[in-house]
Every structure is written in structure tokens, then in C-alpha cells.
Amino acid sequence: MNTQATTSREAGISKALLGWYRTNRRRLPWRENPEPYRVWVSEIMLQQTRVETVIPYFERFLERFPTVEALAAASEEEVLTLWSGLGYYRRARSLLEGAKVVLESHEGVFPRSYEAALEIPGIGPYTAAAILSIAYGEPYPVLDGNVERVLARILRLKENPRKTAVKKRLREIAGSWMPPDQASSFNQAMMELGALVCTPISPDCPGCPVNKACQGAEHGDAEKFPRLPRRRKTIAVELEAGIVRRGDRFLLERSEGFDYLEGLWLFPLAAPGDGGIENRLAEILGTKVEKTGELKTVRHSITFRRLGLQPCLLKTGRFSLKGKPAFRWARLEELGSVLPVSSLCLKIADRLREGT
Image 1 (spheres, one colour):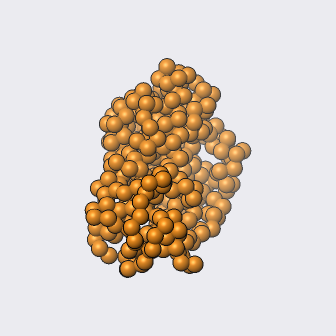
Image 2 (spheres, helix red, strand yellow):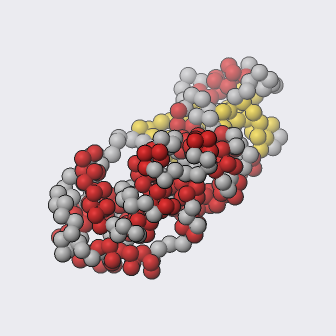
Image 3 (cartoon, one colour):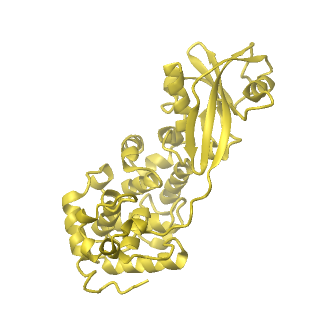
């Protein structure tokens, strides 16, 4: 890989990129007031999640927890409830733990030290660099998926950019292009370019402000980069969800057996076969359970898992939830507003509202 970042071809990258960013950047709520806590929350939410999806979650979260102190005082259930439907719930737990650390060890102010930032739960090299550069203007280059793609195409990188040694060189190159007093704008411009122009499919090379410096654009094969290993093979998971209704309330269970939904409330789940959800609930509730119908199958993806979930309408005998803290009754409108649930649970609720 050519690491000479000051060649004549690349000399104008920063100027062209920053000029483009001033004119074309999106108005995003965390950019209007980029103080450390707001940037921190936005960066955690944006991990593996689209900007359009994050905006309403960010606004609701900041309204409820406007400061580090407010977040640190919250319960996990409160935080997960506001996170309901956003996915990757470990992020929410780490953010809550991180707020407690910042309050206890840094007097409620996110540290300016890179090393100190890395000691906060949920903060890795990318997130630390993003927060410190955007909130404080510290000259740390970021390397998220968008920036990785931009650099790989400009350099026509033939190596896997996610290898440790290659990542290190890419950070050095990005850092050498970064004007020392414009770290915040430069990093955001690189990310914005990847999000709006240098997209994974059909990049707009003619409309790119740095296309004259881009080797991928010059060779007409930018879309072939970055060269990444094949994605992990997806796993199909078939499940049944038990729909038990009592008036306007439905039976919910706090998930403990599914690691990717742990701690969230959802309609009781079971693998089909051997009596499926009916047998499981009959044993737990100590009453007769019969299937009376089915709703349309729900399709849902969680990381590399592809879920096919069959909602089953159930009829039961009398039972009590006394002594069963993992179960409770709830109205559909409480899902995601009072109780922390996943988007999978919300999809099932939509099926119930539609009656399909």
C-alpha cells in the first residue's frame, strides 16, 4: 500500500473535502451542540445503525437523560425501555455503566485523555477517537466503516482494511491528511462522504469532491473496494411465540435463554416441535394450553441470525403468575414505552393490531 500521503494527487484532499462538507453536511441533532455527552450517546447509538433510525431515539433519550448525572441515576430497565427497537442492547447497558464511571471517576465530564476514554465501558478505539475529535477537537483520526471504504477506494487498497496492521497504517494516513485545527470537521466530513457519496453500492464518483485524488475512480473500479473477507454465514432460527390474552393485556416473559434478547420482555418463545410453545407454557404455568390459531410469520434479523417466528394464538386454563417473576401482563401500548422490548416483540404486536 502506498503510504505517501503528501503526493500531489492527494495534497488537495483536505481542502476539497472540508469545502464539500460545509455545503453538504446533514443537519443532525448531535451536531447542533456537540458537547461530549451528546456526542458520546450519538456515537454509541450509531454503531451498526442507520442515522435515520437513530435520530428519534437520540432525541427521546436526551429528553429523558439530558446529562451524565441523569443517566447514571437511571435503572437498567428505564434505559432499555428507551432503547426498545434500536437493537444491540449491550450498547445501552455499556452506556449506563459508562455514565456511572464518568460520574464517579471523572466528575461527570467525559475525559479528554484517549487512554482514560478507553477505560470507560463500551468505548473502543473508534468511539474514543470520534468523541475526542468531535467534542474536543483532539487530532485523532476515526476509522469507521464509511471512512474505511473511502480510504480503501482512494488508495485502491488491495489488503483487508480490518487487519490490525492495515488499520494502523490507514489511521496514520488519515491523520496525515487531517488539518491539526479541524479534526472535528475532517473526521465528520470523511464519515459523511462515505455515507452520502462513496456508498457501498453505486458510489457517485463524478459527484465526489476528491475524485481527482481517488485511484479507484481513476481506474473505474471503486466499487470493488474495500476487499473484505466473506461475511459470517447466516443461521436460520425457527421459533414460536405464544400469544396468551387476558382482556386487553398479553402475557410477556423476560428473556433469559436467548443471549441476544437477554433482559428484554417479549411474548414467550419456544422452538417448534415436541409440543412447542404449548407444552412449554403448560409446564411453566401449570395449566392446559391449546393452540387456537396462528398469525402471519414474522421475519427478523439479529446479527447473523435470521429468525422465522410463528405467532401462535393460545387458549389456557386458569393460572396465576404468583412466584413467577419472569412473567407479567402488559398492554400493547406499554411495549417500548413502559417496558423494554426488542423490535421483534414490536413486530409481533403489529401483527396483533392488524389481526393477521
